[in-house]
Structure formats: structure tokens, C-alpha cells
Image (cartoon, rainbow, N blue to C red; front, side, top):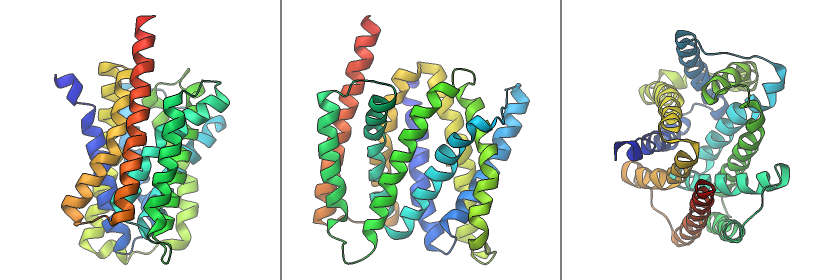
Length: 289
């Protein structure tokens, strides 16, 4: 029973990243600066852990693309989304991750797209349109756009990383690409760096939190979960992230959804359910073979 619950913990911690980061960027710290600072702290801790347990670290240039997508691109797009939209909305767009991954795997890995995944693409797309439909007069729709782009970015990273993980473990790959991402993170952040936002207590504490908890602890627990129950069983738990983000945003930030957002959320959750069912079906068939 405990094994089944452990993979939910990193999803919950990652969900808090959206809520706390919303507070941080709304208080003046630029998303690109937050990306650079967060990953510098998290990477330092990961590096110490990797050295402590004797993990291999590779700084091969072939991993640069994974660093740009899995670290720099994904984080920056999420934080940019939080500049324009509510944490609950940006969090809900993470439901596009399994959808984007399935489509990209079909294109590049020649995996078949099932009817359930195809239906989830339609529902998810309609849901994404509705999430932003009520805010076309403002810039909130940009939050949805950046969130969807982040999901596509993560899908690209997931598919591309399969080859790298033949030689490196997931943790070794994460530490390696985190180090490789540092120069790009800081080059992008330099024009927006300012010490003033970090003088605010909520910004400083929030930045430390997303660096230590979602940035390090959650990844450690997630990789431990994968080792504990296997990648196939653990993978389905990722789909809980959008729901956790929605719940936490409503409870802590007092965010409320308008009629369009409620309808869009319902469609996205339906799409997420279809992808989850498809994933469970494929996992079950694989275990029977």
C-alpha cells in the first residue's frame, strides 16, 4: 500500500512549484531569472548527491539538446506562463504532456497511436481553446500557450532521452543535463537579473523552496519511486500533477475558474483520463506477454 502512495508525493511537490512560482514571478522576479537561480541551487545539490553515491556524470555535447528542452525550455516556459495566467490554468496544461509524448513517440519511435489517445488529442485541444477563450481581450491566453508549449517541450525531451538512458540512469542523465544547462540558463537570465525582487521575503523564500523541494527532493523521490515500483507503473502517476495543481491553487491562492475555464478543465481532465486508461491497457498487455 505504501509503495502505491509514494509516487504521488513527487506529483504533489511538483504541483506546489506552480503555486509558489506564481507568487514569486508575480512579486517581480523574472521567469528566466527564476529558472537560472532554481536550477543552480538544485543542480549543486544533485551534483553533491551524485558524487556521494558514485554516479557517472557525462558532459558530452550530445546531451545539450536534452539540457535545452528538459531543463531550460521546460522551466522557462512554465514560469513565463505563470506571468500571464493563473497557476491552476498553467498546471492544467500539463495534461498535454502524455498526449504530446504519445504523438511524438508515434512520429519518431514509430509507436502506434491508439483510438483513446486520438480521442484525448481532440478533447485536450478543445479544452485548451476553452481555457483561454474567456480571456482573449487580455493576455491570459499566453499562459495557456506557454503551458502547452512546455508540455510539447517535455514530450520532445522524453522521447529524445530514451536513447541517452541506454547508457545513463535517469538520475545520472538529470544531473548531467542540469550541469550542461547552466550556461544557457544564465545567458538568458542576465538581461532580466535584479537583486531587488530577492530582497522581498516571499520571493527569497519562494525561490529557495522551488529550488530545494520541487527542484531536488521531488526528483529524488520520483526516481526512487521508479526504482521501487518500476517505470511503467510509476509513469501513470504523472497524470495526477494537473489535478493536484488545480486543487492546491484553489485552496491556497483562492483562484476561481470562470465558465469557459471550468468547461476547458473538464475536457482536459477527460483527455487525461483517456490517456491514463490507454497507458494502463498497454502496461497490462505488456505484462501478459
